[in-house]
Image (cartoon, rainbow, N blue to C red; front, top):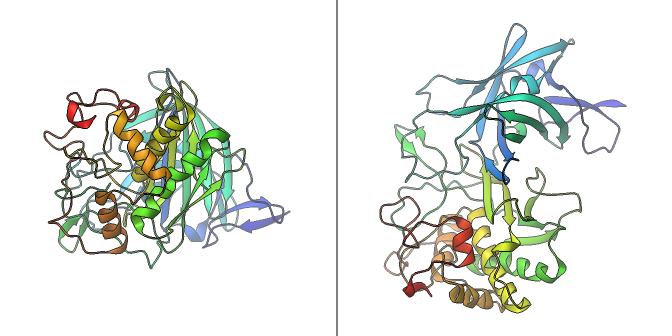
Length: 421
């Protein structure tokens, strides 16, 4: 066995046989020369009591500084320097060699932020408030500590103060943003909506960037092996709807290995959820300074599909998947009252089936979806005179139904007013 330097700067190391992909351990090893370097920390968690729930927390650019027998993990995401680096964790050093430190992440990672990774100015604002409400983790144990190429993946099992069982997933990697990725600044939510980074102070003003994938390489979604064979083609169709919107083959679909499920550090998984787990929903994790989406996690709950024959079920599923993949690409809901112009709205079941049938035969993407993804991803001009109207979740007076629905209710097609049937 030999030491394999897995991260780009020789940062986190583990004993691996040649050709191995990952190793499980109790401690992480940090090179002393890496103290002060920047890392990307991304966290998600699953709550296990009374019906499962999956959430992400705000991604951070962090660094490590030694103070005696501990490492302080500091948040360096505030690029404007208007606030001091915030202490996120105090991590014990368990042993030390000449050039390395063995550190106990399980002991140091004892709280989780309630701030979600994807955000929007309509409910957070355009100025960073630097608030960081957290909940405490008790009875913490290591599920696994593994190295996936350049990413340390740490899974932790714990309880919250109120007794909820929770599994927390940490991804830690060197922060090396892709130089050819083009951030897209969001100046308002007046005409269209994407999820946004938290506000950053740049050149004397607050800046928010759209969350979007880099398109220099294909965006690949992996279908969970749990998706039944009779539904897999419809799920693929729902993903490929967005190639119609992009006007080119940007998205690809593969079959996930049998043991891979969401969340995954290696794949953008479309997970077939089982009853009592997650509702149909999607979450994304991005570079907090530039908005590049790095991980997408999509959950499809089959109970949300209509009952009945397979063909209309698949039409309904195509719409559901296209909607959730839209969120995974960064798009917000568009609940403006109009005829169908986007899959990012909720509709009555007949309209969902009509949209799904169009997706199944390769009909052109709806006009709002085409206009905004080509504008944000490619910089295409936006014809505001022809752009369909827009409003989204937290804007005053904007909701699809008379009572604001849960995502699952909107996907099911219940409760739509008469003009949306």
